[in-house]
Length: 202
Image (cartoon, rainbow, N blue to C red; front, side, top):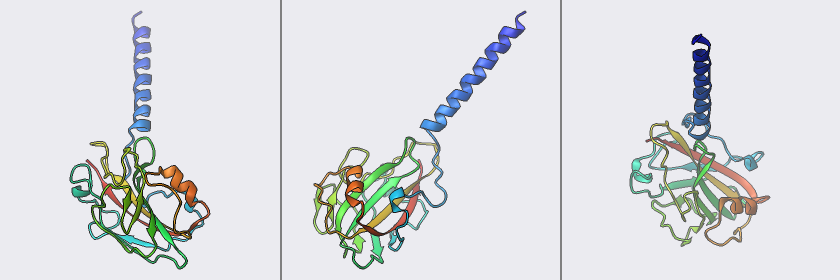
């Protein structure tokens, strides 16, 4: 007579394990770290014309720890080429599409002069950076760049360095803007973009 209750308990245990596993995948999912990353929907129909690169990583490679929370946590140097004619400013956004709870923004730099073809290493976390532009607040809640710091043991994450060309010299936003405000201000102004990406795991 003890058989059925034990089977019932086993069934309940299996259901609980399945539910816990599903919750784990939802809230602590493993980043894929493989293949081209997803891009924001507002870039659909916009020409990918800008070439973005860096002397410290090749596209899809692992970034040195210096540029992460395990190192000095400074921004990597970037090169920007092929900015389209008619562009008056650039926006730089670095984000992690593999973050456990959705896309995570690591850096927002806007009102960058369209003539800029190099972003130096270790841009200081200041509201306005001479010769570069204004910085927004990242998803760490801090101004400027915040390097990769993914959960330990959950695989590699991809980090996208997106450069967007605009037909306006300024978004007319104060320093410290959130990504949502920057995206709203860019609407109807985008004339080209480019990106590269790197990976990191802990």
